[in-house]
Image 1 (tube, rainbow, N blue to C red):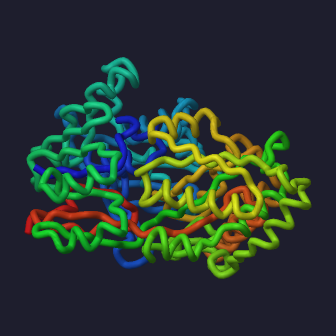
Image 2 (cartoon, rainbow, N blue to C red):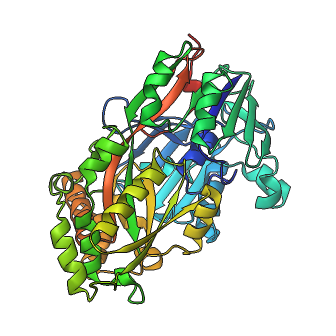
Amino acid sequence: MLTIAQGNDILSLDPANHGNNSTESALVNLYDYLVNKDFSQGQLRFTPRLAVSWSSDDNIHWTFKLRDDVYWHNGDKFTAQDVKFTIERSQQDKKLISAAKFRRIKAVEAPDETTLRIETDGPDTLLLHAFVGNGAGILPKAAFEKAGGREEFFKQPVGTGPYAFKRWVKSDRLVLAKNPRWWGGTPKWDDVVIRAIPETTTRVAELLTGGVDIAVNIPPEDIARLNDNKGTRAITFDIARNLALHVRTGKDRVTGDPRIREAIDLAIDRDAIVKQVLEGHGAPTRGFFPPAIPGFAPDLSRAIRFDPERAKALVREAGFSGNKRPAIRISTPSGRYVKDREIVEAVAGYLDDVGFRTQVEVLDWTVYNNKLVGDGFGELYLWGMGSYTDASTLFVDNFKRHYDWSDERFEGLAASVRQAKSEAERIAISQKGQEIVAEQRVRIGLLFPQSIYGVSDRVVYNGRFDEMIAAEDVARP
């Protein structure tokens, strides 16, 4: 048995309805993608998964050839109709968090069991990106329809992955069992248990005492302890994630004033947070995508200003002085990201130093996600964007809904990135979009964190850039 300790419970068994990287990390063991994302050589490559090959002459009309030896956990045969169903379900159910996943697909056909034809609404060099990550797990058409809909199907979900669903005890654990008919061969583990352990001290203790094999989000101060303990070790690795403050810019909020947003940006000593809170396990930035992601904007990691005196002046210019201090609420989860609460507490201290009156709101991860969906946050909230494969995903976010913000230049770039004639042009557009968001302080980038995991000597695991913990990546010594 392999036991993995996450910092939070999964949010859903529906691959199209969670929008959460740690949930996806569990679901990759249950469902399969059409293609694999591979960062092992320092940049993104797509490799076969359920699709063995794909081709397009114009980046509009695509043909995928699918495996013919794949079976669902219930014994039904996987066909192109299942992929067609998965695409059309996401497009038609607007309530799904990943409803926009396949927005560029205009038509999809399944002329036979192993052939899929897709037509996009224009040249789309990013189509393959839609078939990995949140919302990309393929679902079985017949089993879904037989169950009578989403709620019933996900009580006992069916996938094609190496592990089949056994049970989900909410706020405790997800239990998966070896799929003996997996197309990829014999899975390595009889059972995979993914436990939700929000308390960091408990998660570390479970690893030290042998209760789990892998524990995520280990605090930097515990690295030496794990390395000195017989039978455990700490691993650190770069990940596809950034931590940023997401900002509400509506006119009814104090952060609607661009001077206030600039003051927040200038008040934060990112370098000190990386050194003191993360003990060097990260890199300061004002940006949103780390260097290995296509479209990384290097200037946003170079042009970092820490200027508390200018921040104080901007607060005064915005009409606050003396006992009149702008009130800011910053929301954060605790245990979802490495030192998330401590990072926000440090930010709050910097803001208070330049004249703000800051309240830190710490929330359980499930409550946190519900607030995100319901737009229930105050002026600022910490978010760790991850699981992305390209910087142009910035243009997918609904900035008007989540941040009360719109910008004609940004919207023009969002339209033009779809028609980019070359990779260089698309990257340049993505970089410009990031510069606008950073300039307007709609998102205030803080840092690119490294992941720190604790690993038992009972297993061999080195971590993945996309933070997925696929059980098949974990070996016995």
